[in-house]
Length: 104
Image (cartoon, rainbow, N blue to C red):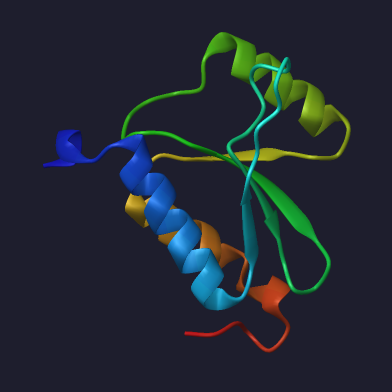
């Protein structure tokens, strides 16, 4: 049942999948700066992505939305992932960043 899946479950699935592919999946903590995304993904090709992970059906808080808008305006869009399927889709859409198509 989707309600049994927590944000932590989504975050774990996201990070494990990315590491298997060869990405660095770093947890962001920024004391004194509320609203920052959960993860910084460093791809093997030198590019990066910012990702906010949520429990299924949950949305970013208003403060997060403002921070994400500011980051996007500076060229750093934030992707929101709220399910294990969404995590898989994120990695599938970014396979090109792994050079040879990424690991399976």
